[in-house]
Image (cartoon, rainbow, N blue to C red; front, side, top):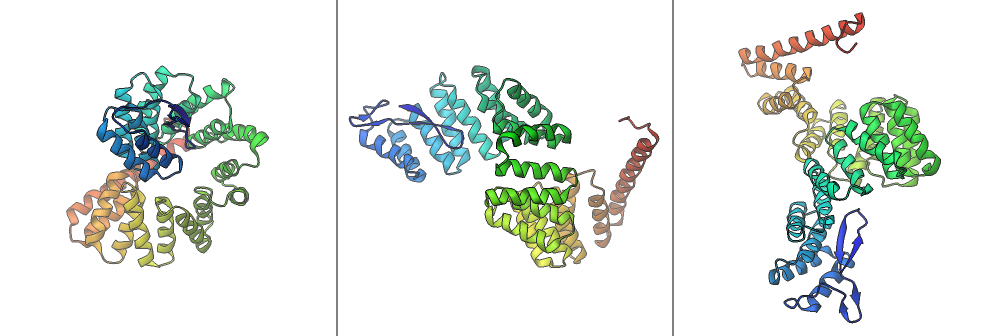
Length: 385
C-alpha cells in the first residue's frame, strides 16, 4: 500500500496496483479481485460503489485497519461525516502507530462542522507530528470558526515566522485579523499576498472583506468583481456582494446577488436570511417567510432569523406563531434589545400583560446599561478606558 494525498488535504491509503496484483496489504480472507475493484472504484471517483465494496471486505475482515481508513475516505467524499469519523476512529484504534489516521479523524470532524472535536483531534495529532504545517493551519481554521481568532492568529504567525508563509497561511492570517478588527495588521498581510498572488480570486475576495470592514463599499465591490471575473463560482463572493449592496440600500441588486449565491450553494443559510430580510422590507411577505424558514432549517440557532421571522408573523397578526420564535430569539441573543421588546409586544397582543411587563423591563435595563456605557466613553471613565 502507499499513502496518497487527496485533493481536499485529507489522506487515503490507496492500493499500489501492479501487474502482479496489489503491492501490499493482501489478505488471505479477501479475494484480490475484491480489493482491486474497490480501489479502482475509488480512484475513478465512484465513491458510493467504493464504500459498498470496502464494507463488503470488512464483513470478511473487520479488523483490516487500512480498509477501515479507506472506507472513511470514501464516506468523507460522500459527505457521510458521522460514518466517516467512525471508520477513521476504528482504523486509528487498530493502527495506533499510524498518526496520520488521527489527522483523518480531524479532517472528517472539520468537514462535518464539529470544529471543537476537530480541534481536539488536531491537538492530539500535533503532539506526535509538531512539524505538520497543514495540520497547524487546519487547527487555526478550527479556532477561528469557534470565535478564537486570537489563538488562530498566534498559530499562523508562528508559521509565518518559520518561513512557511504560503498563500493559505497568509490568507487565513489576514482573515483572523479581520475577525479581530485588526484592519491595519490585515492590510499588512494582504500586502504580502498581493506581491505574489495578486491575481488570485481568493485574495481579491479577502481584500473586499477588508475594504468592507472599513466601509469602503465601492472599493469592496470592485475587488469582488475582479474575484468573480477570475473565478465565477467563488464561494460566498455573491453573498458578500449582496451584503454590501444591502448596506447601501440597493435592495433589488442585493436580492439578485443573494439568489446567485443560493443557486451556487443551496445550503447557504446566510443568503436565505439576508434575502428574506430584503423581501420583507419590500413587503413580499410570503417569499420572505419562506426564505427565513429555510434559513432556520439550515441553521436552527440563527438568532436574527428567529427575530425577523417572529417580527414578520407578529405584524401579520399571527402572534401565536410568532411567540415561540421570539422566545428562541431572546434565548439565543439575550442582549438584543429588539427581540425583548418585540416579545413583550407580542405577549401583550396575546393578553399576557404580566409576562409582557417582564420583557419590557429587560428592555429598559439593557437601554440603561447602554446609555451608561456611552456616557462613560464620552466622559473617559468607562472600564475600557
